[in-house]
Image 1 (cartoon, rainbow, N blue to C red):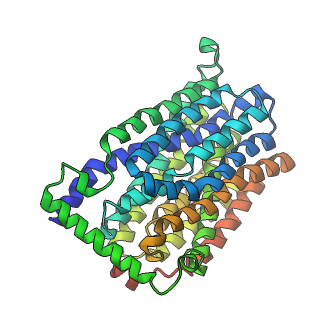
Image 2: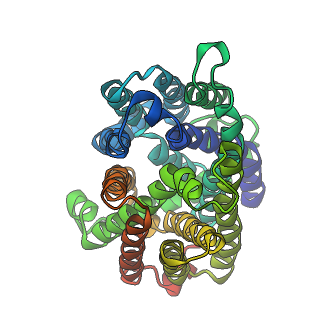
Length: 428
C-alpha cells in the first residue's frame, strides 16, 4: 500500500514540482543572457552588472529564514503558488530598468520574493514522501536546473534577436517572456497542490493512512535525534556549519555557471560570437550536468552511498575550471566548462539528499533555511568577485581558478560529514 501511495504521489506531484523548479530557475538565470546586451544599452560596467546580481542574493540571504518560517504557518500550496506568481512578475519587471540604480532595486525585489522557494519545495517533499524515496525525488527536481539552463540557452539567442520589435530591446523581451511561465505554473500550483496527503482525494484512504503512518514515524524518530540538545545548538552545530560552508562554495560555482556562462562561452567560442551560436554552445554545459546528475544519482542510490558521490563531482568541477582556465584550445576550454557544470550540479543534487540525517523535525525547516541562506552568500559574492576580477585582468581565467580552489575546499569538507554507508543503509 505504501508503494502504491508513493507511486501516486510521484506521478501526481513531481511533474508539477519539476515545472515549478524549471520556471523559477528560468527567471533566475535570465540576467545571465541579458548580460550579453543589457550592460551596453544601460551603460553598465562589469562590476555594476555583477553588483546588481549580488543585491539579489543579499536580499535572498536576509529573507530566507523568515520566509521559511512563514511557510510553515501558511502551508505549501499557497506559499509556493504565490511566490511563483510574484517572482514571475518581479522578473518580468526587470525589463523596465533604465540604469544601474533601477536595476539594483528590481534585482533586490526579486531576491526578497525568491527567498522562500527552495526551502519551501524541500519541506513540501518531506511532507509527502518518506526518506527512502525523497533522495531520488530531490535529485530528479535538481535536474530541472541544468535542463532550464539548456533550454534557456537555446532560445535566448533567438529572443535577443527580437531587438527593436514593438520598441523593446532584446534583453527586455528576454525578461518579459521568461517571467511568463512562472505566472502560469504559480496559478497551477494554487489549483493542484494540497498541503498534506490526507487532503489528497486521489489517494485511497488506505494509501493515505499508510503514507501518513510512515511520515509520522519518521517525524518521531527525527525528534528523538534532537531530544538531547537544544534547538539552537542543533541549528548551529559544527556539522550544520560544515553543511553551510559546503553549500556556499557549491552555490558559488552554480552562480558562476548560471550568470556568466553566456559571456564565458562568447569569450572561448571556436565558432564566433553570434548570439544564436553562443546560445547553442551555452546549452552544452547544462547537458553535461543532466547526464552526470542522472548517472551518479542512480549509483548513489543503488550503492546507498553519499559521501564519495558528493566528493567526486566536486573534484571534477574543480578540474573542469582549471581546464577552462589554462587549456590553450577553445574546444578543451568548453569541455572544462561542461565538467565544471556537471560536477557542481551533481554535487548539489546529492548534497540535498543528506541534511535529514542532521536535523530533527523541529529544526528541519530552519536548518535548511540557514544552510540555503548562508550558501547563497556564494551567489551574492560571486558576481561581484567575478566582475571585479574580469575588470582587473580583462579575462575570466582568474575567476575560474578562484572557483576551482573553492571547490577543492568543499570536497575536503564533504569528507567530514557524518553520512557513512551504515547510517544511510538504516534510512534509505
